[in-house]
Image (cartoon, rainbow, N blue to C red; front, side, top):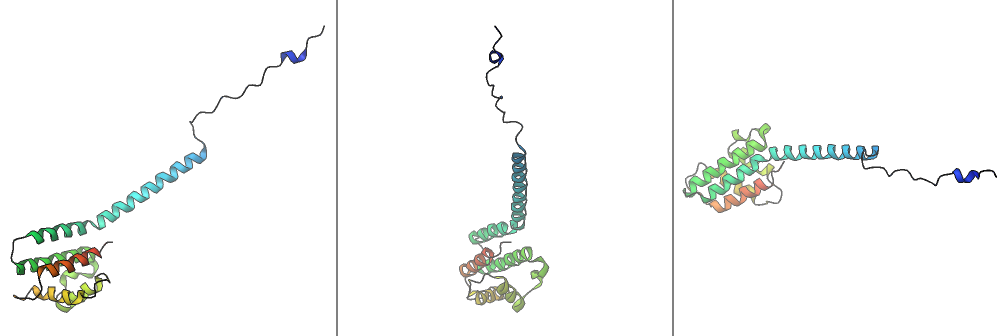
Length: 155
């Protein structure tokens, strides 16, 4: 009796399941894309932080000036100096530290956020408080306008 040819056949064997490594080329591409995006975002945040470091410093100095026991005329003078240093840090190409009088007021008006309609009069009184012994400007009013100016200066 001849041998049954079907008896020599083996059952169907499934291939071994693939492991998770090495990943498919699409996953490599996605990983590289995510790394590049993370590096670009990190670089952008670092540059922005460095550009706005002066702003944090100015705000700290403004808080110290608020708590200062110095006379109001001295604090107004220091507030004007703080504003000049902040303007120099934000707009170095326009050389705001060299401005005084109407030119300084115009600079502050031009660089102030648009939501401060009464700003020009207060800027004028702040600029005059540097050389006038008595002024009608209070430190609280001046501090409010400087805080508003600083708030609108992010790079």
